[in-house]
Image (cartoon, rainbow, N blue to C red):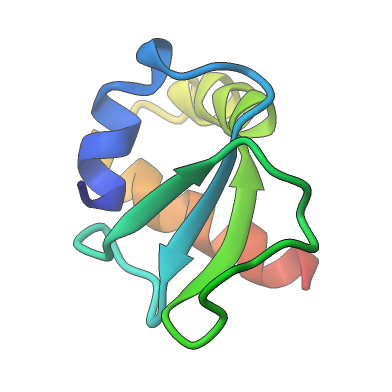
Length: 85
């Protein structure tokens, strides 16, 4: 599944899951959902920690007010996360 599809189906995921995304981050990047601790990245060369699902849901609600399409929201989320690093 890619990041864009993950955003489309965000309500099907548990709040305490962690999202890991393949670099470079884009809407087409492959994702992996994990229920493990952030430090247990089993494949660091392919996926990097992105965000916890609960925080991602909050960001989606925040960006909903900007009246942009989901693809643009995806880029806004990526930008937000990169700024946090």
